Amino acid sequence: MLINPIPQTQSDLISDYYIPQRKRVLSMKIVFMFIITLLLANLAVGQTERQWSDFIEKRIAVQVGDNLDEREANRIFKTKDVVQFQEFGEMLEAVKLRKTDAALKPDYFVNSLKTQERYSDLEVIYIPEDLYKIEDGAVCRNEEICAQFNEFLAKIKADGTLAEMNARWRENETFPDTLPKIELSGENGTLIVAGASGFAPMSFLGRDNEIVGFQIETMQRFAQFLGKKMDYRDMSYGGILLYVSSGKADISAASFDLTEERKQSAIMSDGINKLLAVLVVKRTDLALPTETKTENAFITWVKTGVERNLITENRWKMISNGLGVTMLISIAAQFFGTIFACLICFLLLRNNKFIRWLANLYCGFIYGTPAVVLLMITYYIIFGSVDISNILVAIAAFTMVNGAVIAQNLKGAIETIDTVEIEAARSIGFSSFKAFATITLPQAVRRALPAYTNGFVELVKATAIVGFIAIQDLTRAGDIIRSRTYDAYFPLIFIALIYLIVTTICVQLFKLIIKKINNEGTGQ
Image (cartoon, rainbow, N blue to C red; front, side, top):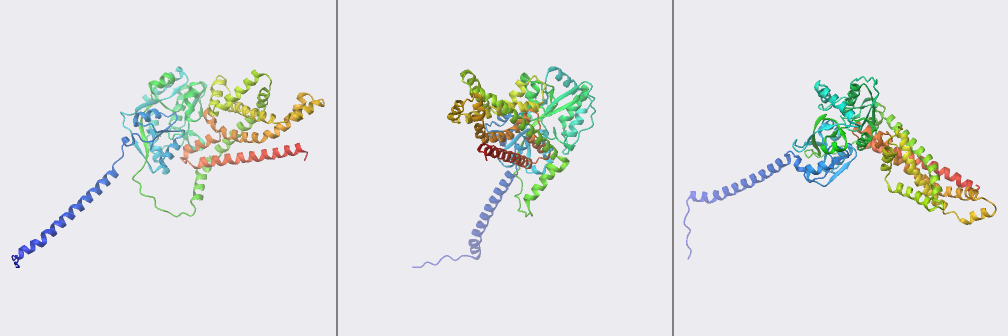
């Protein structure tokens, strides 16, 4: 039996249709609003300004010898992943390439960084003062120099000179590339200052290849205060403290943190300026790079690099002068090292066990000690109390190193000579010395020449460390130019190319010499 449905009014029919539709629309609106809220939240998070605390336990870069060192990075960021660099530019490149999360530096370089288009993709994050705020000061050779510098500091703080210098160098985004005119009489002698010209605006390469900056002006004014001339010794930053403490310089141009621990081991001045700490990090708010077609990007890069790093202000002269110093040290060390090697080889071949032991001990010490450590020992210990040219010290150090290497090679070559030939020469009346000079030595020299050639090539490359004792060689000249142009790659590649050309020429010359000697030995 069919039951007829209860008839519905028109209003009931309308309700049955529209109410579900309204619910669906309301649900869609709720979902839509939820999605919009999520998007806005994500956008807000993306735009939140990063804080120093975001880098706790991250990978932090520091500079060797800097105020903010590995220990400070560990203390502030609770991290054991600290990477140490020799140069400031290398730190910035590591951040750009994301090889490290951030670079830790004092705040004095911030304005300099803002002016460099190359680093427009980097930003600076300040670290709270309660975590790091300290004064910087100079390291002095003795208490007398420190007392004089402290008196000078009090004077320039009182008369406003220090404030004027800070305004000129540290507080403006654009700073000069020349020093103000400061007359130095020199009536009371010379003030020897040790510094590292790689930190704009503190100490960097200015106009006409002159080292300028806040620290240089400070030391020039100090020299004027003393009635002295100033002799500036430029070197790698890591060598400054030892250079001054050993008495090679009177005072440091570079600033060091005034900590109680450092004051126990070094003579330090009163505070010059208060320092804050900052992190240099990769920006996250940059738009993705758009592809642009260039006619030849490599040629453009080379032209720009040559213009900025070599042509401008005749900077190529620094490279040529540095190359001259490198070759002088290398050739002189090779010559004197060869003579010294003959003496060591003579001792290595003696029948006396004690003499042989001494010679082997010396060679073992040379082989087991890094060249930079041997250079420091020669400069600060062996010639520590002797007033001698830094270049002569470098020649002496590499002579000792090269002498041991050549002696071992020559000894090995001599021991390969067949004793039958020597006995035959002795049997026909040759003395032991004549048999050695006419039979053994010529053959040994021919066999040792390839290793001798390789040794000279290694010597040329090894001289790159002489910047630690204030010698401006080829490598150091490139570092100084980088401190001015902030071009991290071109100077390095150009210097590497020069080393390659020089060593290739040396190898080819030695090959001609070896060929000529071998031809003469065979009678051809």
